[in-house]
Amino acid sequence: MVDLELRHLRTMAAVAEEGTFGRAAGRLGYTQSSVSQQIAALEKAVGGAVFDRPGGPRPVRITPLGEVVLAHGRGLLTQAKALADAVDRFRAGNGRIDIGTFPGVTKLILPGVVRRLLDEYPGCDIRLSEVEPDPQIGDLDLLFYDGRIAGDVEHLKLLDEHYLLVARAGAFPDGPVPVELLDGAPMVAWPPTYHQTWLERTLADSGARPQIVFRTTGHDTIVAMVRAGTGSAVLPALALHGSDAQSDSHLSIHRLQPSPTREIYLHWPAERTQSPLVARAIDIAVEAATELAHQL
Image (spheres, rainbow, N blue to C red):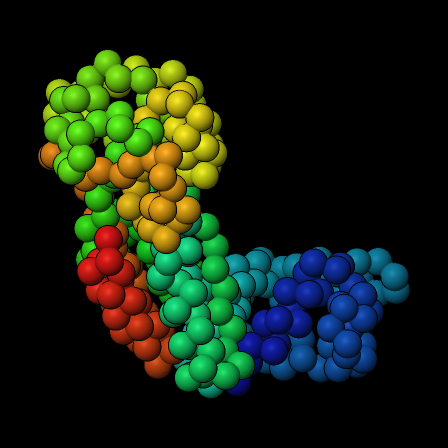
């Protein structure tokens, strides 16, 4: 088996899928004689025929030995592709990094991270994707999420994000607002997403069951509804940081007592060797989150 090569397995898979040596050759960009030579070399390595060749235009048929070789060979090809991807990711200057994120992090943490990575590693390939509730690390190199995730991952807590009360100016006394004052108060909120359900349950645990008078998506839309007098709202600090709401004379923003708080974590695969690009991204994200935490 020492003469077994990945290219021979790749050729065998193409023949099995295409049905003839000729079509496999066209797919792979080889000559038909080259395909025949590679299959012959594979058969010599495994000690038997992997295809029955009826001759003429009729399709070849895989042998029982060929079924065994192909089943394991496809696994080796998958591993080889994963190895090639890992090597590509590890190359610092031309590396690739896949990051899972959510809107608050995308808006306030990642712009600085991306800019510095591009400055330090020109030509690197940075790919961002929005994560869903209960995400998995999968093929991601890094994943930002408000909580811990399942799987074989390492994690680092970046910051505590408080939820803030947004109300019409004068609707509540200046300063922090006790949560129980929201009990029965009209409120604009998100639809009952995972995070909104958590928030409403947390408020209820503190003695407040606001009257949800309108639900809509989008933090900006919710703030506009508050400005119009529809009701107050409780929104995450990252959504309000740097927004026009903070300087709007028609609005007031308050801390809540006790404050609903979610923890923002950064995760990465525990078993995967980090490239210099990924390691640097973690360092920069920690710096950016620490600076942001002082501003919230």
